[in-house]
Length: 315
Length: 323
Image (cartoon, rainbow over all chains, first blue to last red):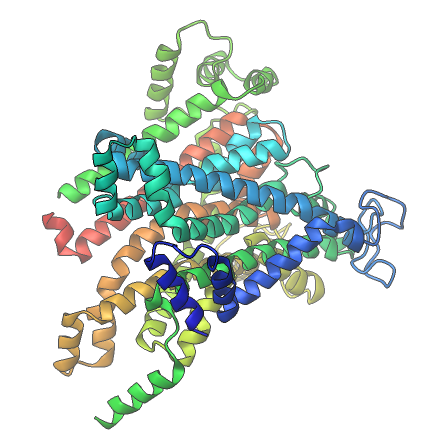
C-alpha cells in the first residue's frame, strides 16, 4: 500500500526520468490511499454523467410537460419542478456545464497564482513586494461580497461567472507557490540556468514550474473545491442566468419557488447534494494529496501507536 | 513593535485597495450599469446624488483624479452615499448590524472553539480513534456548501418535524422586549441558521490546529514540561496549545471573510434580516450604492478582526514584540 507512495517520491527524486512509469505510479498511489480512491471514484462518476447525459437522463430537461410540483414517484424519481419538468433529467443535464465551469476556473486561477507567486519569488525586490501586497489584499478582501459586487455589473451568464471567479480566487495559492518558489530560488540548477544566460520567463516556466508539479496539482484541487461552492452560492443568490443548466441555477429556481415547502423538496436538495458531492470528491483527492506529499500528516499505523501507549503506561 | 507597524500598514493598504476597487469597478465594467441604476433614483436630494455621480463616474465633467480624491474624502468622513430610497447607506447598515453580529459572532466563536479543541485533542492522541475520525470528518463537512447544510436542516427540522421556524428573526406579531418568551423566540429562530454556520466552519480550523500542534508537541520545551512531571492538561494547553494556536489566530481572522460570505447565503436562505439579507435585497434591487457600502463594511470588519488577531498574537508571542 505504501510502496506506491514511496515510488512517487523516488520518481520525483530522480527528476522524473522515468516519465513512462509516472501515470501508472500515480494511479497506484491513488488506489493505495482510501481517501484518494473514493474521491477519484466520485469524480469519475460525475465526469461520466457530464460526458454522456443523454444516455442516462430519462427525459429532456426543458420539456415542461408533466404535472407541476410533483413529489418523487416511479416515473419521476426526484419529482418535477413548478413548471412540470423532470428534476432528475435537469440534474443530469446540469452536470456538464457545472463541471466545465469548475475546471476552467480552477485551471485559469492555478495558472494566475503560478505566474504571480513564482514571479514574486524569482524576480524578488520591488516586484516581489508589490505582488505580495497585492496577494495579501486579495486574501483579506471578503470573497463573496466582492464576487457579488463584480457579478452585479456584468450580464448574468457563464462567461461572467468564470471571469469573476478567476479574479477573486487566485490569492491563497499564489502565496503558497511563492514560498515554494523562494525555497528553490538559490538551488544549483537555477544558478546554472542564470549563468547560461537564460531569460527569466524561460527560467520560470521551464526550470522552476516543473519542480512544483505536485503543488500545482494540489492547488488545482483545492481551487476546484472552492470554485464549486462559490459558483453555486453566487447562482443561488440569483446572480446567474437562470436559463443556464447548472446546479446553482436549479437551486435558485427551486428556492424562488419555495420548493422545500411546496412538497417537491428534491428539486432543491438534489442539486445541493450534487454540489456537495462534487466538492467532496475534489476535497478527498486533495486531502490525500497532502498526505502523499507530506508524510508527517499520514495517519500513524494504529498498532504502533497502541504499542507506544502501552510502553508509556508500563514505564 | 515593527511587527504591529507592518500589520497596520497592510490594514491601511487593504482599506485603500477596497475603496479603490469600489471606485474603479463602475468605470471599467462594460455597459452602463451605473448610469442606468442611478437614473432610477427618485427623491434623492441633489447633494447626495452629486456624491453618487462622483462615486460612479456618471454625468461628471470633472477629471477622474479629482473625482477619486473627492470620493476618498467622502468615505473617510463617513459619507458612504445613500440607497435607492434615499436613506444613508450607513444607517441602513447599522440598523441591520445587530442581527448579523449576534448570529455570526456567536456561531463563529463556538465554531472556532470546537475546531481548535478538536485539533488539540486529535494531535495529543495522534493515531488514536479520535484522530482517525474527527479531523477528516470535520474537514469533509467543512467543504460542503453552507446552503446545502442549511437546506437540509430546514427540510428536516422545519418542514418535516416542524420543531423550529422556517426563517426570519422572530415570530410575526410579537413585539421586541426583554421578556423570556421573546428572547426564547429569537433563540429558536437563530438555532437553524446558527447551526448551519457552526457545522460548516468548525472544520476550517481543526486541520491546521492539529498540524501546528503536532509540530509543537515534538519541541524540546514541551518534553521539558513533561519531564518536570507537569499535569497533562498543563502541558497540553499552556506549553503546546498556546504556541500552536498562534498561526491559527491569524487564520481565524482571515477566514472571517469566508464566514461572512457564508452568512450572506444563510441569511438569504432563512430570510434572516441581517446584513447578508440586506446584501441580497440590494442585489435584486440593483442598489449599487448600498452594495458598495456593504462591501466596504465587510472589508472593514475583516480588517478589524485581523488587527485584533495581530494584537493577540503580539500578546501571546513575545518574539513578535521584539522583532
